Length: 129
Image (tube, rainbow, N blue to C red):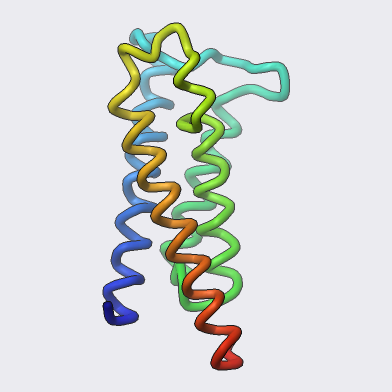
């Protein structure tokens, strides 16, 4: 797979997370079931989703695999998405309603993490940024 193809794959994964989280945020604002809770014990969901969306968009702009900044932002976006779409959601009472988003979010997050890891390993072998 060529480097531009890997970058496109990472961008596609980030775009997937952006769409999933945007729809989740819209469902929260509209109170359309199923929607995420407005708050969890750690923080309010809307500001967290805004932060996760910002990280994903910033990763796309900086190049998700091209620089250390892009790789860190991509990894951060993937990890933040797992709060909403991680394995803990299998135990959620609404799982039968949200499973397509959960599975899609997990696939996108894992793909991004693998691509970032591969890019970082390749950069360290070649001495790049």
